[in-house]
Image (cartoon, rainbow, N blue to C red; front, side):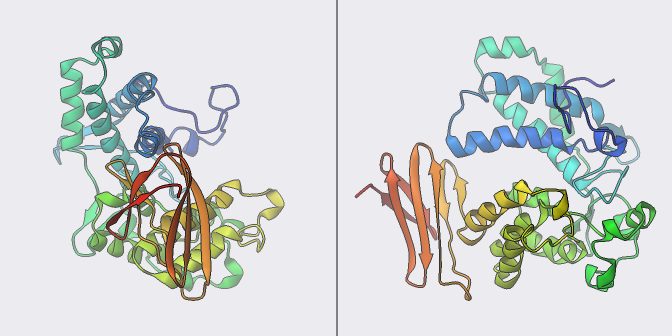
Length: 355
């Protein structure tokens, strides 16, 4: 009943196969995640062949979905999105989830940028009218993003701050994980967050937020997070490392790397958490090594946790294989394969060659 395209949450054949309505119909931030994946691939590889062709069609149809899914609040003179489940699956059917609203706004903005770059033939095939573009820009300009001035945080969704706020440390140990000890009624009324929600979108767009914004939001939401998703610890490890919360960063790295080995969430019997295994690499590379891509250039801000002696990894970047080693003597970068490349280490540009 909406324009455009909504990607399925779970599918084997292209048709939605998930059977929980609060996820199938409400966890629509996944549509923004698809757009972000296109952007992230393009940013990392420098390859625009997809985004300027098939990808522009995907972005256009996703944007048409968002433009039809928002509604304009005459009272507030802003665009809003009601009746969603954000990344925090312990909150269902909420209004104005910050993560969802932010991704919708960003997707429309990114799509407009891409439309300015496609060929005339591709633009004709997409058939985005001037009126449609103007409407998308209006949504970008007037999207409602919940914010609390006193706490200086983005509010996870309307009404979140009305809950009985208490940190996870207040939960008796024998009641964790809460998804195995509490009823859904109890969980949904609680302030506890399954995985990063506001913090997830701050990780995705980490360069768009100030260190002060990141600190205030991390300090508020992390103590409320039970990390009962394999997706959660790695994201928090990266943010903690970015904030120089070394002990927290190491603890979250250990949790993501050893999630199944130590059976943190008492659910290893259900199978291995491949997402957490991936998270171990993300926590190492984006967290401790501070890997980012800025304006097409690879950069690092590495540090060595005090209880470690060394860490090392390899990565592929634009047809190069780069090995990074960090120990007590400093950081060593080695170009294993590919043409010479300029990278930044702690703000200083270095040229890597195979010799």
